[in-house]
Image (cartoon, rainbow, N blue to C red):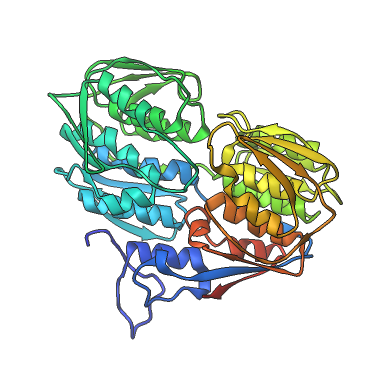
Length: 461
């Protein structure tokens, strides 16, 4: 394959070059990585957590998963050599690298810097196995149509969080002149000439639809206006990357984004913003153990609602420009919250917060407004002794004095993180299986928690 990465730590006796995705798994897994494994998604490992430790210390976060994946796709908009810095070594980055590889780019990952060479001619196709493994790959649709006038993309997969239709993506691209047909699970799109600027009124501030529309519009003819656009910090970061490439995107971070199409873009080097979800996970790790943790390389303004709710449960928080310090209470207080688009409470922080509330003093009501299957992990949490009742998009969490460690399974990225956090506060030890989900969103979660004093390790299957 073209998308290869040199193994930086190879010995003189072993000059083998590992595939991109194998090296990324090594970064995720830490010292337990097995270099003989050919498919990282088949690694059968578990995380063992022994509860009772109070976490203290400092931890830094890497680039935002929800930004870097789309910024990798944005590179396809211009031939040449691109670089991203602060890139996390997570499985989703490796999967997106394999998508770029199939399209014709070549990738090299060194430290946390990703270098991508994009050719003049690209293959306008994203293969079924990779798109089904990672929903974010649907964002290749807009760039492929914009650059080549054609696209063949399998319907997306990723975490099983319920129905997440791509109708809003397709409606926006149709208004820009694209046509689509769906056959045998593959979406084929085409456009006569170039995409045309249009006024796009999104029914919902969908992050994916906003991103696809921006990526399609930057080299379209004319001006595109996106009304009711998503406002997430990751979208602002993508817009900053595109503007450095020569695009004309204004209004990112507001509900109205305007894109003036340009004739061509050029490669740049871009530093990915810190991952607010990784930062929030470590914050709750500190809170759930009654510890004190400093989280660096993240803007606390990107977690404004999440930190506000942590203060309501009894945490003390000190905010800086690119860090915050959280001191957890002896026992959290119950609090109600609902997930909403930014600047509301992020749906990807909901499971971690529920883990905290499971041992809080009182009853909390949690409302999930975005994904209809987000509560699938609740059964695993209840195996640990949590008292939670769910009905449709609501969960009633009755705090118990303590949880009990037991074997559980991670159904998605954030559910897996939540179960690890629950294990930190549980009696005995907890083993979390299916941890390839966790590796999709966290580089070395075990190592970072251990550095804060957690009793945690990865175990071979």
